[in-house]
Length: 417
Image 1 (cartoon, one colour):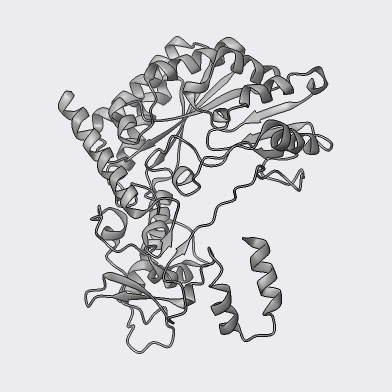
Image 2: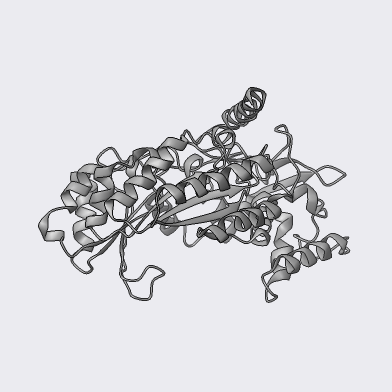
């Protein structure tokens, strides 16, 4: 949509700002927040989102690139976060649709450029300036020609290539794949397991067995890789202490069966994201305790644990579930320490501020809801969401069905046990 947007902007550049907005809003996929007004009930609940004029679209639908190529680096520099690496996007979205995952749901459909017309030209372009190549995607190994890409990179002319790959799906890892990756300089394998509990994996639609996790670890060791990094999560809906213990037990068994392989668990707290089936679920207050328990069980046994800050996850949740009433909170935090305490203090200050007849329209809005309601409360699926007028690839009804299916699955698994 960018060419259409730029062409339109050039055509209307002499018009007043508000007229520009009204014309640009007609382009499918363009969202101009000032043209939309939230309507609140007397108790401050969001009940609707209205346009400021009858000619403004009542909803905005996300537009999707449907070409045969995806992104790759255009600037390669030693000053980048990943220095001197040419990044190539191998896939976009993910066909597995784990129910918490923004990268899956918001970027549907799953797309993979062809090897000959998309990936090889992108790789060749980068390798003219660097010998470091990074393959990116939510699940790169699910590209239908991924093994063909590795076979091509196995040619002798790539002997000095250093390859790195983002998270791979455990069920796609094979002995051949692991050996190819090792031959091209990969030191470790990264897979997302989310949880060692089969109940939780089923609930989030992970479709991953314990056997597949163990096999991928063994393939990594046999291929000569030195590390295995696992991504996990605590605080998912219906999680209890037994699920945390099962995660620890699985990693301890992996450590025992793959002696010499450096195992690292990167673990975060579940944060609800818009346009996913778990957008109605709040953060579990027990998550902080569960993070500490995993570290207590695993670190003494030689497994590295890298937890994401629980406090930062709470801040993420505040930003992901709030409406525009969080804007003055963000402004108030500016310049202070970026800590959970400073965000709570700012939020409380806005809640207690005198908003009557305030000149700032953001401060003239109703007070934001209670902190607990935004962060920890599970919302009813009938609730009007702040992004109600913004449509992703799936309709709200489909997300509600996925949400209900997950909770039904958890109930069935609990009854079986």
